[in-house]
Image 1 (cartoon, helix red, strand yellow):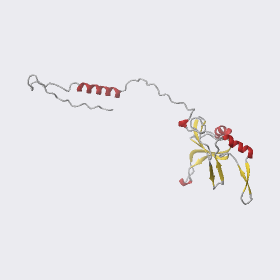
Image 2: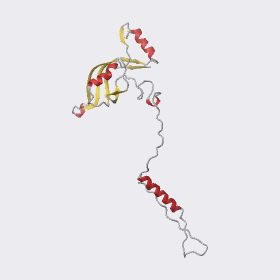
Image 3: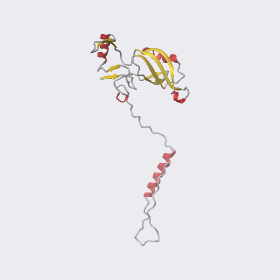
Image 4: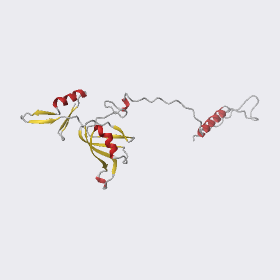
Length: 209
């Protein structure tokens, strides 16, 4: 797949596997000479998308976490140049941090979409970043299809002490059943011998607390 970014004068090429991509980088040493129809020669720089200087956005990280902790966690992915807070848009008329940290760094490896920094699970994003699984941080699949995700086992049904609402509801049901069993009664003194008159009792309504 080829995608052209005209304003930035860039072309993105998606390879079917990483082996061919790295082989191309080794064969060209990161540059390739292109000859135009006019005979003019141009030097084209080849690199992995998203590598080099990037502004990495880190979300969900408390502001009290020191910059040194952020640098230590990102050190293996590249050289951290600067860390600053992202501010709300100037349309509000005042400078207030929105809780997102902006890390300027030279990437040598792609960062996962989620990381654990100082015990907090943070969201990491930047231009050209490949999407990774929320569960295992590997690319090529999403969380719902993750082969490394542990499936939850339905918990066993645990018996517990009945609440007051359960007791009232059970008593109401028992009362209604007892009333339904005696819906037919004989009225004395108003019937001839050997005959009976039935009286339908009104139904008892359940009460829900």
